[in-house]
Image (cartoon, rainbow, N blue to C red; front, side, top):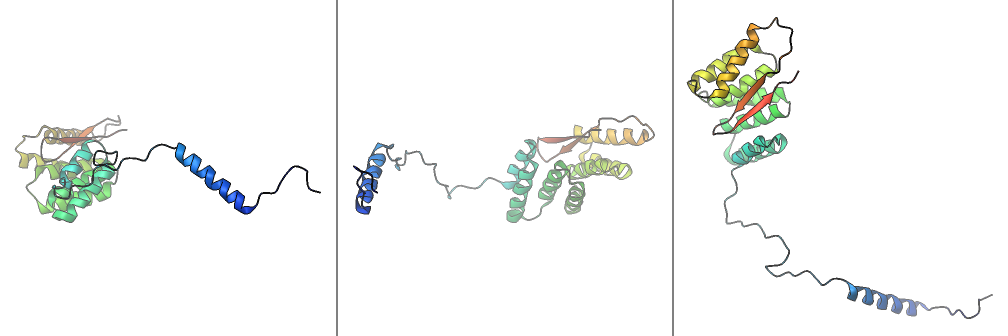
Length: 196
């Protein structure tokens, strides 16, 4: 039995009702976003400008403690400039910050092979060696960095002092909180804190 007073809607009537409802709802919505030059869209990429130097970007990211992003920046710079001693040192230092000591050592050794006269690369290699407990080799590396730098860099001098003090106190069972400083070409330096 059909209920009385109820009529069945035909498919055409339902379609018309849906179209009318959609039109009413659409007319109540916000206005369209302006696509004028002063609109809300971000500006496009200016391809006529020079891109930022990947090495400098990598160093800035290192200072901010963003080691993974720094690795990506140094990798992009290597694609453009090749694996220079500075890029290898940056990649090695970023790996040290990420705790990848083996990879850091490999990259820093390659860096000092490419530029044997760069004290910052030798210093950072010494820091990796100290982190791995290679005291004797770390001392030699810090001495080389100190000699190449003529004792001008306080971070290299302090790292050498720490390495010498640590080797003299090998029998000491007290855990020390040593701070080793990583250095880069320029005014910035990185600091690695050795925690017990």
